[in-house]
Length: 145
Image (cartoon, rainbow, N blue to C red):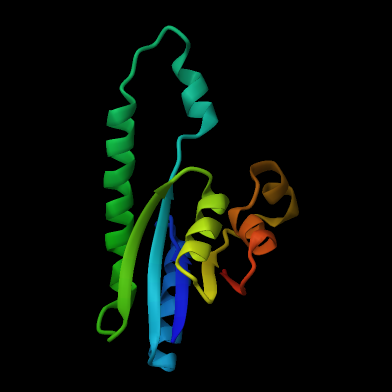
């Protein structure tokens, strides 16, 4: 049985990756899929709050979890009609690091992730989660554009 981890952020590229995973699962007939969404607090957002501001991290965490649930629910549509076990996982932290950690913990055989296709300059400035996953993974990674 093939265990596939599909990383999703709800973007069109992530949805294409989920659709690819669904096609693979259909062809393999014996597959297990884990959808993973990683919530994170961007450092810029946290720095913009200021030292004298008061905010509730619990509210932020709750918002991240709700947004993650909506993303995972949306991504589940790609697997409609398949007789494949699909589980959903929410993690919080470094995007690439949590994807890799989840893949290792759940003994995934393949990571499937979308790519925005920013090119070398855009990827250099913004960083590329898919590239960091590719270079950090100990298992095959399928990057979908």
